[in-house]
Image (cartoon, rainbow, N blue to C red; front, side):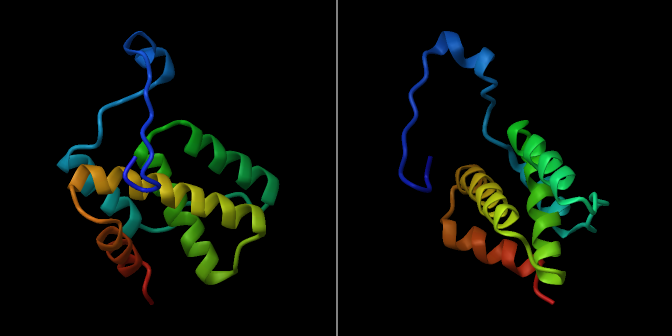
Length: 122
């Protein structure tokens, strides 16, 4: 993984059961950026339900779901602030998204951070 300079080695026979997938292609990256620029989707006002729903999206491994979590929590953070738990969740989701986009676009973390931050500037 480019961020954290980590290498994960997994036996080839375990790839399917672990849910590994190919790195996002250019089309997927465009869709991720569209999601990040989209409107916040409805989230539960109950912190516990919202947390569980977002955690499921992150655990799914679906980069589009992770992008949705980043978008929704970033918007919420800008509007109302986040609890400590949701702040950690946002940081985790952001890290997953950054790692994917750095590899997919063969660029630096700084460039991706700057691009994503631009979507949320007011």
